[in-house]
Picture 1 (cartoon, rainbow, N blue to C red):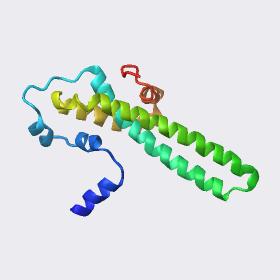
Picture 2 (picture 1 turned 135 degrees about the vertical axis):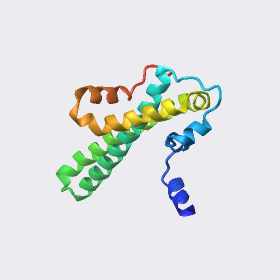
Picture 3 (picture 1 turned 60 degrees about the horizontal axis):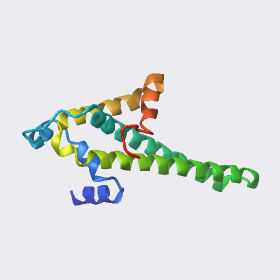
Picture 4 (picture 1 turned 30 degrees about the vertical axis):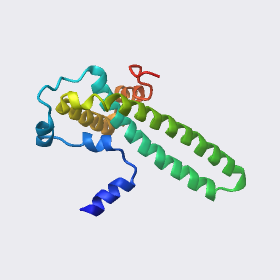
Length: 153
């Protein structure tokens, strides 16, 4: 059991996604008696954190592939792959910054809102991530998470 927690701690995954992953009875028992329904911004924030976490994972894979390609490419192409890696790293930093802002927004709100509704937003995000390649609407919804207008700058 401890090895699983050590693995979790070593991956750099934040505490917030762990808290969000609980569903069903565990959430119902943890529900404060006076929990309020979440606002649209709160639901959207939870949705966006999950979408952006998936984008970050994809971005990390692309950085790895571009770095590997740069190492194996002949000199004329190496510069192109290095530039691509740098661009991907800049985008990764932007995505991570947005997730951080969303987490800062949600962290003080989570204890007072209906966690079942927040979990539903996370499940919807995961479903949309799986289907987004089929739907322009879902792609644009996910892209909107990159610059959430309800958050302070």
